[in-house]
Length: 308
Image 1 (cartoon, rainbow, N blue to C red):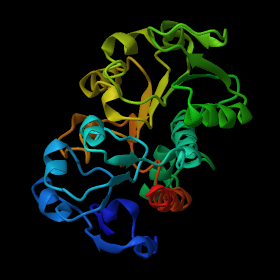
Image 2 (tube, rainbow, N blue to C red):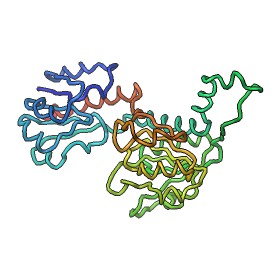
Image 3 (tube, one colour):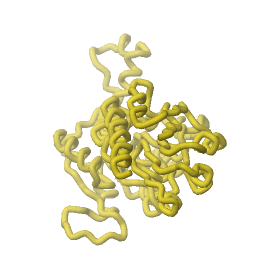
Image 4 (cartoon, one colour):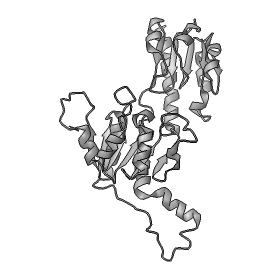
């Protein structure tokens, strides 16, 4: 088997990707630009890709292609319909990053509630050193106990976030998805979530239904003291409207690990704001998660070969 890994940099440099060589001849590229893809996959039997797009055009130029391993859960960079037409199997890896994303979500909530970055900056700048008293009280520090956490997307990650938040004494509100009838009675209307939540955390996939799920209209329904956290996908929040909501104090603060365009453009106005934390799409990247991801890729290749 000729195996091509197209974007090894997305897996990190601390994993032993040479384990893949037991299945065949491995060619590794650290990154692959769109114009380089066709040439690099022309002789491939198996492709491993995180974000490199493999569409109809690419498949047409890879006559030996039998398996596409997506080094992620989301498969929106693969033309699934075309793959099915060509009898090319597509396998992703599920639930490898649940613990990491849930942990990062709670870290962001805590950082905002504790004014963690602000107090750290006060210390490093020397402001605490010249304080007339032993402490500093110039930033708010709120407890989580008794606060309401609205969760948008109650899959594996959303459920784990709920578990962790309950330890802090938070009340959990689970949102209904628009247009879906539920048999259970614990889910709450989306607009009620907006109005009652002290913190809203997003864990739903990006789709036609969830694109721009949060606009200025939704922010205006939220509490002025509310926080919004997004560790899912950037397009779920309209960034222009988020900027307006934060800049005009319509909501108190936000923390996001994802943006509409990644990496975030240097001129994105969100970078100018003091009441937002932005991390570079790293919620999934714990050492343990990436090890599980590699194991999942190895298992998918082995499973495919067992069928052959």
